[in-house]
Length: 594
Image (cartoon, rainbow, N blue to C red; front, side):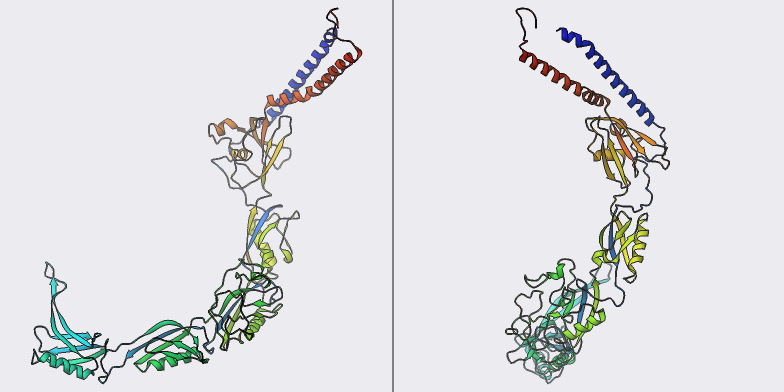
């Protein structure tokens, strides 16, 4: 016990020194806090009075999004692999009809009218009969399926309203003068048969009959050219026109043949024949890696495994496909094209007469201009058609993939456009960057037009700094969008943690490095009271500082200060106790000493 008492003054001195150090730390911290409370300006933007930030200027490491609006190569551009071309092939008037073609047939005309014709069901007679009472006959009658006409005449009268005005007509009675068989008669014979029938009741009756209409079958429909077993092609029309052979005929020649057939029952015949599949090729195609164009593989149509690239290595990129029937030049059986060609047999090979005939590939066009490629495709398609007009245009070039997309502003302030080099954009607005990039691309494109937008605002940020109460401060960086307030920023870090106090302020950088602008924030007001007075709008470069809780900081500091002493004292006591046991000095209660 004497040793402990002798060490008490030393322990007391340590405690006093610790208290003085803690108090001194508190005073220093408080002095620093007083320096942060600078006068605040009433014009500062707040939650309910925000301001629009200045025009955004591009800085590293912003991420820009560049998209094309109009990007067409200059004249003389040479096609290369992975370019996309639009090919439209239009069958000319000199091309002949082939098996599988769809043709629109329209036939109109006026039936032949002659008294020498025999009446048949469906014909209409206009009958004028005088001397018939109580109602003369002036009406049209149709020959029914039994070959008779029914002489029924309705008697109508005017219908008047309460004011005496005519408001319509109403049926008074129907006068039935019987039926007359006229089928197989000429018009003159039918007229005499009607007169004799009426004379039985009305001896003074006189009759005049006129043929109004002969049954006809106008055509307004689409038909398919069929291939007969004798090798001829034909169009099967409804009765009474029948089968029209069209082998080797153009649409105009088939039109004349149909008109000639219709003239047997009509005059003033108007016939029209038009190809439905007049545009057999109307799609977008990749220039494949070997420099060819596969006219049977439009962009967006997948191919089977082992047939090379799948839809030009860009399946799903472009779906602008309108393909009609793909037909050969001479008599092969070709179903309507549906875009699927598994198991198809090329022209001339065994079994090729029973399956789809493919257009196959147009060989190497790599390095050719649009006009040169047009000539190659036209020459290729003339193997299938006698008259074909081809149009070729560039729909997408491979280099567009280097221009479009996301571009990171590099540390030297430029964006890289692949093979088109780099363009400096640092310090420019979006409109200025658009102009600069378009001017740079005008070396390769004709009047290029692009759009530029910021995909990620990486250069304009604010910081949230949390004091760690002696355990290390935390700094979190957030991009600024121009609408954040103090409350928004604190919500980004999940609120105030256990070591944070409610002393918060914004440190805003100023152009003068010797000046500091500090904006105190009242946590209670902006949360519990919903006050916007200190819920300031954050600007680029702001530091939102959240101070530590002083009691937590004091406890942490005291723990850090006493930790070495505790370790030393614990080690000393343990060592002393161990040494005493080893030397045999143990407690002796009987003698009343240690």
